[in-house]
Image (cartoon, rainbow, N blue to C red):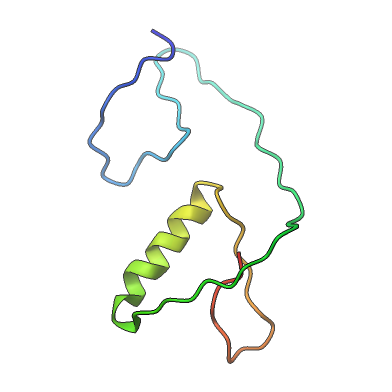
Length: 81
C-alpha cells in the first residue's frame, strides 16, 4: 500500500527518497536547486577520521541536504556548505 514503511537491507543501492515499485516506471519532477543564502565552513576536528568525514559530507550532498562548494584558495580544502 502507498505510504507503508518497510525496512530494507541497503548495500548502498537505495537513497532517501527512492521509490520502490512494480509495474510501469515512475518518474518524478526533480527538486529545484536554489542559490544558497547561508554559508558555513565545515571542519574535521579529527584528521584520523578524514575518510569517515568525507563520506558523511558526500552522503549529505547525495541526499540533497546540502550543497558543497570549495574555496578558490587551494590551500583550504574545508567544504563550504
